[in-house]
Amino acid sequence: MRASMLSPGSMSKGHCRQPDSPSNAREGRLRCPQWTACRTTVKDILWVEGWPVSYESYAVEDRECIADAPAVGQLRRSGVIFVGQTTYPEFGWEAVTDSPRRGITRNPWDATKTPGGSSGGAAVAAGR
Image (cartoon, rainbow, N blue to C red; front, side, top):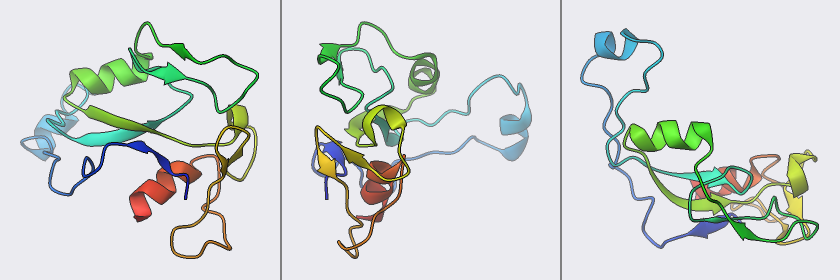
């Protein structure tokens, strides 16, 4: 399916905790809610410190990210645990998830169809 690079069992249900109350979530709009131990994935376009990033292209050499992207850092500070990278089109430029590095990402329920793009790998990971 070419959905992502995940650790087996890392996305099991029941790992997210929402804010203590809706009013707490509304307070301080600039703060993220606390998602203690919520496991998620990110596209191979977002920097996660210590992980390789390729933008799904052979035009870019793999390199280890030296810092988190701002969105990744904010989520990490809120308690989110990143468990893998999902596929997407090369540089995110297509409407289907087809990259030179990983090939075509297929719909997990019907391999003759696409899960779409540019979040096709995320769609497959969620649909599994």
